Structures are given as C-alpha cells and as structure tokens.
Length: 347
Image (cartoon, rainbow, N blue to C red; front, side, top):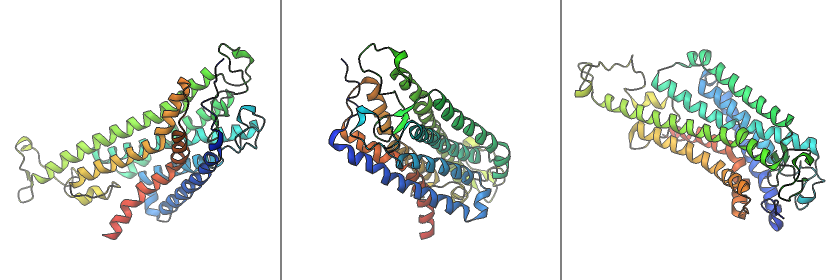
C-alpha cells in the first residue's frame, strides 16, 4: 500500500495555510491595481512599449491573485481525503479556479518580454513607435494564444483538480485508489502520471523558460551597457573621435548611439537604480532584483513539484513559504517598477 496522499495532508496547520493566501492575494491584487493606475494616469506612458507590457503583466497578476485569494474554498466539498481543508465548492468552481491559475502563469512570460523590450531598445535603438507597430502585436498574439490555448486544453483534458493548499490547479483526481498499479481507466479525471507531466508542460517549463530568457537578456544588456560606458569614457568631445586604441577608427556620436553618451540617457529608458558603479552596475543591480523576485515567488513551488513527483513529504515551512510568496508576484512587480521612481523623486 502506498500513502499517495501523505504529501498533501497538513493536519493542524491547515488554518494558516488556508488564510494566508487570502491575505497575500489581496495585497498583490491591490498593488497590481495601483501599478495600473500609476501607468494610466499619464497618457504619455501609454505610448511606451514597456508600460503596455506592464499593463498586460499586471492584468495576469490580478487574475493570479484572485485565484490565490480563493484559497481552498472553491474545492469540491465531497473530497474525503481533504476533509481537514475548508472546501465549499464543486467541480465547476474547481475548474474556474484552475482556469484562472493557468491564465496567471503567463505573468512570468510577460516579465521575460519586458527584458526583451529593454534589449531591443538598447542594442538596436528601436523606438517605441516601431516596437509598438512591429513587435508588440506579435508578443500579444503569442501570449494570448498560449494563455487561452493552455487554459482551455487543461479544462478539456479535465486536469483541474483539488490539490490541497492553494486550491485547484493541474493535479490528479484524489478519488482514485492509492494502491500501486491501480486501474487508470477507473479514474474519471487525470491520472497521477498524466497530471504530473501536464503540470510541467503547462506550468513549470514555461515559467522556467521565462526565467532563463530574462536572465539571458539581462546579462546581455549588462555587457552591452558596460561596453558602451567604456566607449563613452574614451570619447573625446573636442575632436569627436574615440580615444580608445582598439576602437580608434570608429566615430562615436550621440546620433548613432543614443543610449551611450550620458548616464541619464539610459536611465530615462530603463527602470534602474543608480549606484556608485555606473549605469552598467545599475543594470546589473536591476537584473539581480528581477531574478531575486522571481525566485522568491516560485522557488517553493518548484521544490514542492519535485517532492510531489518523488512522493516525499512536504516540510511545513515549504508549504508556508509557498502560500505566502507565490500570491505576491504582483506586489514584487509593483516594487520593482515604483521604487526607482520614488528614489528619483527624492533626488
């Protein structure tokens, strides 16, 4: 006999795990609303590609926060293995919560698209008007196709099931028997193997891929800005020539490289925090904050997904970290956007 539900039960710790997502989800939702308001109150911001992507990111954050705020309340009330949870819903409400969760997983993809926007602006000097006309529509199309397609596919395949804390998402049907070698055809919903595979396909792999794209774009951006700063320091304004021996044949002009000559020209386009190490160091610092916010949000979920595949018991602190940090992605995005602006206003 295999205790296949031992990783799901939490015993006396159930109340904090049910209540905390309601609080953190509400905080994240309010922060996303404030971020949208901050962008929309100035019409000139709506013409920028970054702000348009941030609006889309905030929309997915709000959807994800709503799903987290519902906690376990929408789970089917007739699930015997989960009687310790507060479940008041049915299969339809469980599908609704799972659908919203899957839509919310597009938020990390939006973050990756924002880093690509920075790269296009700095590396290829792409203007916002050109970006909005030639690049942004394809980003919108691909993102919405994935969001709607994956969410509907998981619904049609009946993958949305109650998984304990945080309610319903892609999971196995726990009404199935737990014995090793049980008849998969007797399960009316997804089997454990199928659910674990689909969880990686529809959730974990896209999120991890978004992280790799973001980190790669930020690393490349840092190298580009560092190189441009070196060229800017070697520029001789009296002759208009580059004093660097390795680049002596190149004329360094503001018109050809509009991001390079002054630190302010980059800061006007990048939401970075100025330190004592120059713009390159500020870009690197900004990238570290993006990566740190991502890992704070999703690392506990990744650990739990791996433990679930190995049937190991979840430590209580992993559960607590997951229900606290995962709903807060809207809060972290709000801080990353607003803190540099607050610092500039103080100066």
